[in-house]
Length: 161
Image (cartoon, rainbow, N blue to C red; front, side, top):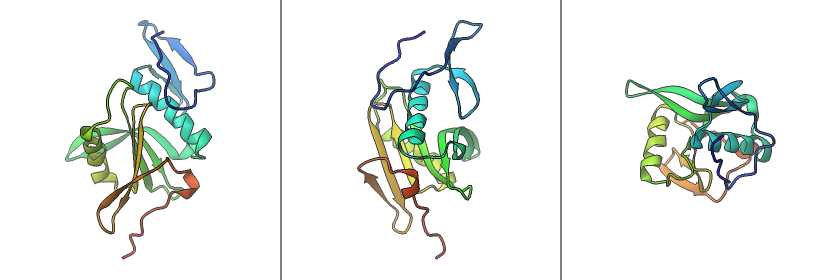
């Protein structure tokens, strides 16, 4: 198994790891219900989704990993999308490996996904540093939040006007 870095997140309780027939390490993703290749980014994803579910009360059934979107006619995949109980996309998470710095290009990447999904919350993380922001569609401003909110505190923007 590869070296698995310690992250700035609670540890996963007994992650299910294995080697596939090609000798590559895999980790079980409970949201997708299957083993996936264990990359540094996937290690961050598994920790972060466990954090959202276990520490921030996000319902597992409303979280999707590797969600397909079409951005400018190009098929892309959002790392994680969280939905409101109504089924409306609520939050996008973009993961990077721990050795990758969170730069403007990461925010540009997640914003390209948001140009399609129009969610009120964006999170970028490399497992060590986490940024969460709320998009205010009434004035087009982005507000960085001091912490990741609990799921019950997330609100959808008012689009009735």
